[in-house]
Length: 209
Image (cartoon, rainbow, N blue to C red; front, side):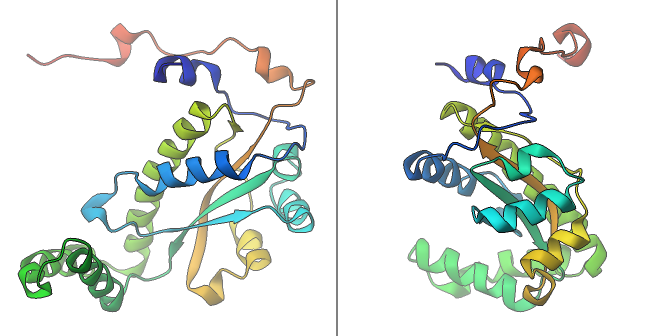
């Protein structure tokens, strides 16, 4: 199927049937998500893949009882760092140098730019910036799930503080910002039959030539 067909097929699944997504499909979704665009390529987030049944049920309670969390095969929890440190940025620069087989000193200007922009932000602003990058990855994850014919639901409707406590994120220097349960739609999920509602393309797109 084409990307357009995949995106027409997907919807925000409200109830899943509990069927397990295969390792092959889940791996494909995660690999695609890892390839998502982020500013500077910094990837300032961590994605927890929660498949433990007991933990999923606890997360469902913290998500105001929404069924797709507990009935999913897994819940992807996108978490951002409480603080992006100089060490984080230097670690990224070293990864770039190693991956591209180049001297790390050649990246001094690039490192200085990141330190002077992202690194100079207050922690709260860093978290907002990091969340924006996580949402780009979320969009890629949704498209990848649709390509694999795996249902998903992007969700902000959860108590982030409770998620952080359940998953022990604070002690890891992280905070949850958005989640994406994945699985397969339940036969009684009425929203699967809803016609997709979107703006007319003539209203959404304005061409400046």
